[in-house]
Amino acid sequence: MESLFYTWNNYRCTYSVHHPTNSTGDEGVPLLLIHPIGVGLSRHFWQRFCRVWYETGHGNPIYNPDLLGCGESDMPHVACTPADWAEQLHHFLQTVVQKPVILIVQGALLPVGLELVKLQRSANLIRGLILAGPPAWKVIAKKAPNWQQRFAWNLLDSPVGSAFYRYARREEFLRSFSTKQLFETGEKVDNEWLEMLQEGAKNPASRYAVFSFLARFWQQDYGDAIANLTQPTLVVLGTKSSSISKEGKQETPDDRLLEYVKHLPNGRGVKIPGRNVLPYEATTEFVDAIAPFIRS
Image 1 (cartoon, rainbow, N blue to C red):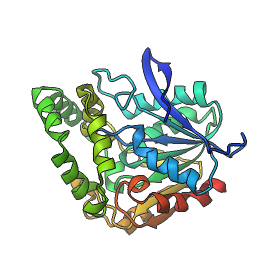
Image 2 (cartoon, one colour; image 1 turned 45 degrees about the vertical axis):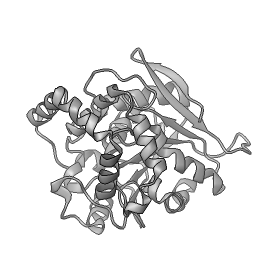
Image 3 (cartoon, one colour; image 1 turned 120 degrees about the vertical axis):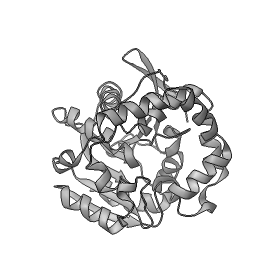
Image 4 (cartoon, helix red, strand yellow; image 1 turned 90 degrees about the vertical axis):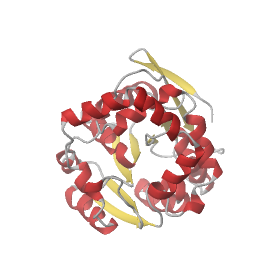
């Protein structure tokens, strides 16, 4: 995929744009993807989704940006919040995409999507949202104490954090964590996944975005923001979805789906086989689940 660039707040940011090979120039509402954040993760998380989307006959243009601190975007030594990444995407929408999109957001990056919706209310550039494996409801509707977030960031932004990141980049750790927390079965943790993570984590400066995520700057009680979403919203959960946070460990996939749909004014939900990284581990099923929503 060709890397394209734009500037935001004097940072160089990266993205790619995808079209079907037989593009006619009128393929429907564009999709804007928000990748997860973790060791080695970037816009390349979506590579399988983009491929299968077009292989199955869909034509929507896909805009796939790297968030600041990830992939090929600049990696400043700063603590990023969901509001910061939303500002980046707001600029991207206004200056690069320049048309309404359907937002697809993976996992616990949901707060970035919600902050972006707040910024876009007047611009009306977000037509709908698809939430792929959002966090447990008790997690997304809870605020982490500010002191706890600052303490976690300061601890990670130290020699202790640097040592942890070097350890976390090892294939053994990546395979173990992916098997225990992300994928339904260990067999699905393939070489393509592990090589992608190791390549993405080569630059040690990639740790700052990961530390921002681990410090839980994203946990700010978004219950009201979800209840105020007016756009059509589809929640896609895996039948084996789980929570890393202890607050959400007792929540079943049915519980989680019920809570989201109950709080969303214009929401619906669907379960598909898989666990927590559905666009990657169950790509075809994920595409089949979201296609009717996008067409409508």
